[in-house]
Length: 178
Image 1 (tube, rainbow, N blue to C red):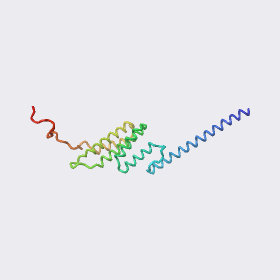
Image 2: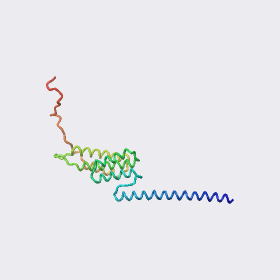
Image 3: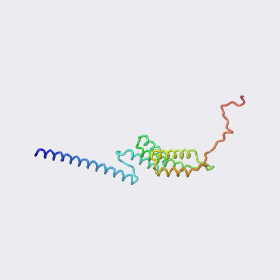
């Protein structure tokens, strides 16, 4: 009977040690996550390599905040290549749309009031990014709002420069041949 009680006590002691080790591990994980959350809340870059996706997201976000929308879009696009989860892909597409929209809105208009070609391209790409975000996460209210805002900002009447096709001559076609 005494050996049986010693065996049970030994088993329970080992179980207690395993539980304490697990609690210490979980506590350290929680502490690391809190540190990363504090860095994000303060708007700083994440220094830990334990969270590469969040680190890259924050770096791309900072690029967009500083007005470097082109490089922000590139950073977000690199994140898409890492095959994140579907909700994260939707968030990345939403941020790509935001940066492209801001980039398109910052470009000046032509003399006739039409959008420059670069701005048209950025805005059309922003629309595609918002639509992709909504395909990945249909209930996303922020993507719906920004897409509707984009569609309101750009009415159908805005046209690009139209080239006259009638007066255009092709230089490699000989003139006068039947």
